[in-house]
Length: 88
Image: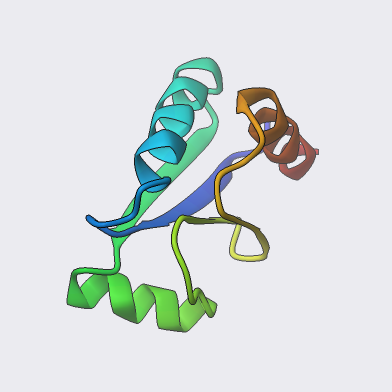
């Protein structure tokens, strides 16, 4: 299986970030090859990483440094499908 790296960008005042975070935790339990790194835009390191990847809003998921999902995915199945596509 191909390892998939996800950079997940959040902020403490983001209302949708909590929901996306829960989805990612569930998917990590299902997909052992899924690696999630969370970045907070409230912290300097998070802002630097966001700048590096061109992230301007939260929640944002960047899959393997390329594909991005901005906002809250429709549901867990939609997010799972996007991540499965990255594994192929």
